[in-house]
Image (cartoon, rainbow, N blue to C red; front, side, top):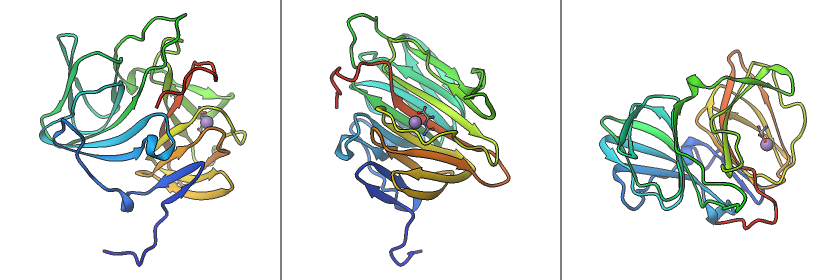
Length: 248
Ligand code: UGY
Ligand code: MN
């Protein structure tokens, strides 16, 4: 069905909102029975890439040239690394450090968010370790003492990690307590519910399935609207001095 050229998707210099009606699928090198919807990449000004990988049964992701983070949305993903095998269901996730050879496959139709970033090495800290877990095993904590806004940090909060991936759950009516403006950029996948996102000088209605990229210092604020909680998965670069190389 065409929409007479209408969409909620927007591209602005400091942010992008992508809604599912504008998603375009294409394979990446090495993928088998799998396609990617690329949401953010250096072509946009981002220092990382983020895509949704859609696997058919027997599907496989290609090799990674950078660190890779994977969060399962639907189905079951099998990860083979370090001569171990793990099966990840919805909310399962993995972090694979740069250089770790691994295989990511799906025996049946599955979807996962994949974030890749060149590692920003800091001589004062060691390399990050592999992480395989589920969001269900991570304790949440309130943001700024607001118990209606719960954050789960999926990666260890250690300086060896140069990015963070968190989930944030807002009870209906909960909102960020401030308009944030910060050096870190964000890639955000709306997982559940919806609300109003302020990005730059625009306010957008957003809902599950949407993707948002926020450039460094993009003014940002969110308030949850509806009768069910709103939840998103959010990436940010992290733990590095602002003068360290911004690898692309
Ligand atoms: O971690 C963050 O910067 C987060 N509070 N930002 C956001 O939700 N837009
Ligand atoms: Mn932020």
